[in-house]
Image 1 (cartoon, rainbow, N blue to C red):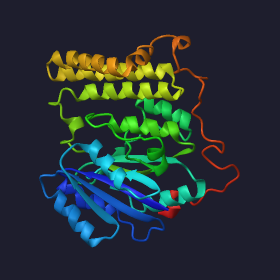
Image 2 (image 1 turned 60 degrees about the horizontal axis):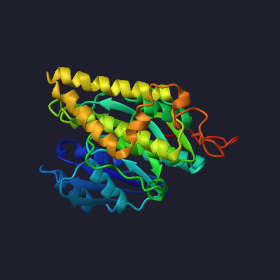
Image 3 (image 1 turned 120 degrees about the horizontal axis):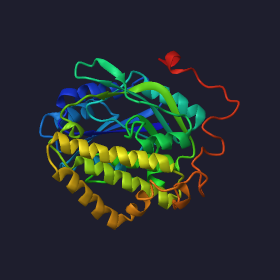
Image 4 (image 1 turned 135 degrees about the vertical axis):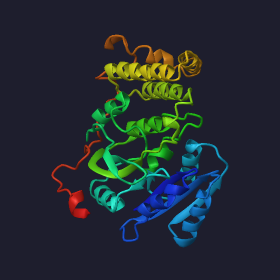
Length: 335
């Protein structure tokens, strides 16, 4: 079993060594490659990447001009060789023996997709609290949590079978600054034949005040989240995936409320107006508006997003766990 860990890197020299060190597992039973994609960093991040690549055979560095995290992840995917794919941001960490834990789970259960818990921490590395608000070990329920934005929406915090990306042509959408990995996670869940949520905090998410999602001066970012949501709904329609209409309505209302909050914080009417304009333009091109606008209507009027639709999203023939199989030692014993 070979795992490719893809790390998009951009101006994170203060945290990058801690990130890479957490990924190096010299005693792991699985083969590992760490792909560091330097996305045009202007600090010492690129040199740090080269330093690790020269010291460790399992580390590769790719340098590219700055195009954003989606392009960096796509480039890492194209260059990857592993049967399994993981994503870790350049300022985050994995807990000790995380790859060993995942290796034992995958080898025993043969999952297509595994999600696991995350925790928040600050620059002093002090753990704050779990990041995952709620979870489910059933794929159908987890998809609903993803739609409602109650689960972690990024691709970090999971390990995915390579074939999911390449057989279904799943890639990150350039230009979307919030929600680009929400889209990818949803698509992966749609196509996974077996899924499991491993209820242990294996991923540390750093609270970075310089993150684009925390910069309130960037007023159009919230619009990207709404666009991402419409892409997800459009994809669900195309794949005939069952989605709870109440979840659609709640998520859309929450996203619009966030836009209004952003407008108030920035004392700007233009934020909301520009968001609506962008969404209208996108919907005209994608056809997503037709689907999204049904969110508040009775289930009978929904084209595909109804329970009992033509394609359920339950687990594969064997479910997420082989019946009668004895599980391996839990994470406390493996650690």
